[in-house]
Amino acid sequence: MVSVYSPGRHGLRTKLSGLTAKGRKWRINAGSDPVIKQRAISGPVPWVIAIMTALTVIAAAGGLALGSIAAAAGDELQGGVTVQIAGPPEAEAARQAQAVAALLADDPEIRALRRLDRDERAALIAPWLGDAGFDGEDADDNLLVLPELVEVQLTGEAGEDVLADLRSRVEAVAPDALVSADTSWLAPVGRAIEALQWLALSLVGLLALATLAAVLLASRSALNANRQVIELMHLLGAQDRQVAELFQRAAAVGAGVGGAAGFAVALAVVSGLAGRFEALGPGQSAAGLNPLHWAVLALIPIMVTLLAAVTARLTVLATLRRMV
Amino acid sequence: MQASSSVEGFAGSGGISGSGPMGPRRSGSNAREAIVRFENVGLRYGTEREVLSDVSFQLHKGRFYFLTGPSGAGKTSLLKLLYLAQSPSRGAISLFGEDAVAMDRAARPALRRRIGVVFQDFRLVGHLTVYDNIALPLRLAGVPEEEMAGPVDDMIDWVGLGHARDARPETLSGGEQQRVAIARAVITRPDLLVADEPTGNVDPDMAIRLLKLFSAMNRLGTTVVLATHDMSLMERQKDASVMRLVRGRLDDPTGALRNPPWSWGGSSREDWA
Ligand SMILES: Nc1ncnc2c1ncn2[C@@H]1O[C@H](COP(=O)(O)OP(=O)(O)OP(=O)(O)O)[C@@H](O)[C@H]1O
Ligand SMILES: [Mg+2]
Image (cartoon, each protein chain N blue to C red):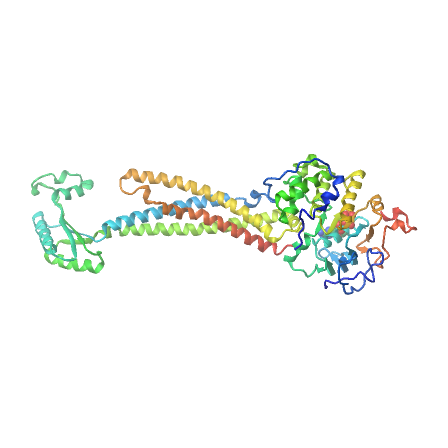
């Protein structure tokens, strides 16, 4: 490579100094425009990416939040089993509940066991039926029979075989007993969360595709629209790499701005929703999102920016290979 | 074509040589080193007739050449081959000892950086200031901003555009734009300066001033090729050689073309315009 320019070699200035206007203060040109304007290259990329990023981050935040709520609830319910005796008259139900409690009292696999008293059971049902039907002291006065409940806490997990074994032993002493793991209540929630997580994941995939397509098309059309300037750059000695860098930077800036805007929108929406969830009741704070989750979500616009830059670079290099 | 050249045998008084076999290069640097060699070069755009035919010549380091000929004769086309904007349809071209036809795409930028070009249509970047247009080749060559600021400002002053440093080209007159184009071509101190009618839009005084710039660069070692119709300009540059294109052919491929034609006697200056 020839060094085109160096101060020492720039003899023209000194040699021609007789012809040069004297006394001029040299100014350093701070931050000049790029040869092709950034907006001419990135086109609609920022908008496409802003919208896609917002949607993706919201969906992903939902997936993460519900996932962590479910996980926390699951931990709490881990190893919990409920024996419910519903159906027989109250006295018979009480007898069966007593039998179950007696049966399991000394079981080594059971850490704790508690038969819920009448008031507790009434309180559990109250949200659905009110306490109208159960306020009579005398059982016979009541319209409905309150189911008996025995809460059992296993030492281990309430796996399928543990549960089956427990069920057969309980049913031997209490034919009307229903044995269920507490976590089974979560199964439909789990499935819903799983579906949401797949949705978030496919949105991430779609975002990647949309980024790819938007940057590819924008770069191609900018290459066409700026063919003259690019040829000029080549004739002035620019390497393909230098032209590609121009496009790469513009795509990265465009995608970065779009991604940041989309992320900000998503942040506002998610915090708004989190506020509503907290208003529903205590327990989960900020809809279950911790700082790690936010870091993962912040990766989305960052990855999009990188993807945009790489796409622009490869598009330009591939196209320039066919130019003079 | 190999990167070989010989000045012996053709050079005579050192001007343009006619076609002929390219002998082995003489070792060592030579004041008359051929830095450009065309051999039976032909050019056609698409399927049209040839715009250039059987063009053969050599340009020697440090010399000054005029390229003249009627409008449409192919001057710009020939210069495009010279500054690697175009590949020939046939023939061989060597630039600075390298085969410009077979050359790898990746090797072209290095060669192009040794060539300064004043385009007939200027080709300034519309949204850049005069300063940024002139600084562009330096930026592409990776020169640090603080190193280029002085020389670029000097150049701006020298072509008389100090008042327009931060102006956009569209706000300048044709002649001013041309001077920006010239400043951009010479700012890198190229080994070869190719100027396509660089004085076409300026008044005679400015034309002379610009010729002085080219001349000064030439004295500093730059080989200059200047396409022009301007007889008075050619007359001023006494030591220059003249190439004349007529309908795509070099007028006198036998090597008779030497120094300014009017100095030979016989032909009148008007014949050459
Ligand atoms: N890109 C092109 N495609 C097709 N034909 C072209 C192209 N460029 C030039 N030509 C043709 O080639 C011939 C030579 O053109 P060229 O521009 O080289 O002439 P010139 O000597 O520079 O003329 P002028 O003095 O007017 O600038 C002309 O007939 C022109 O029509
Ligand atoms: Mg021309």
